[in-house]
Length: 145
Image 1: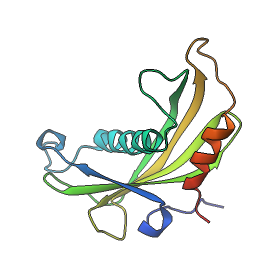
Image 2: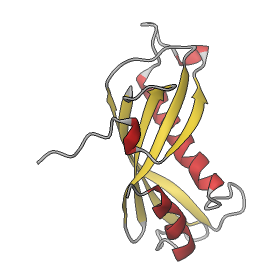
Image 3: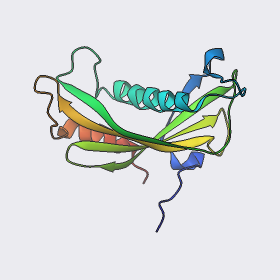
């Protein structure tokens, strides 16, 4: 059985505006594939900062990216305005699996979608750790009801 493709705007809880840059385009005139991973990372990090789950310099907890994937549907090009959608697919003892998508501003269907997995790590020991309850609750706000 295949997994549901999260390509519709209604699949996502939070959206973050992103700007494409001239340097994001490749020789074919569209945003290069690797840039979508940066869009995913930026959107998830923005959520974590906004939800007060992450302080970039002081946190005793760090979020390590252990897996990302991206499925491309249609191309985007500079100077398009972009929105990245984020939702929670799964939360485990030490890991979080987000669904992420990139949309042309206002579009109903995604140009690309994928998944982004974090493992929580103790900054001092560099070992994975259980997700603290206060962070778990904030991240669960991304779960589609």
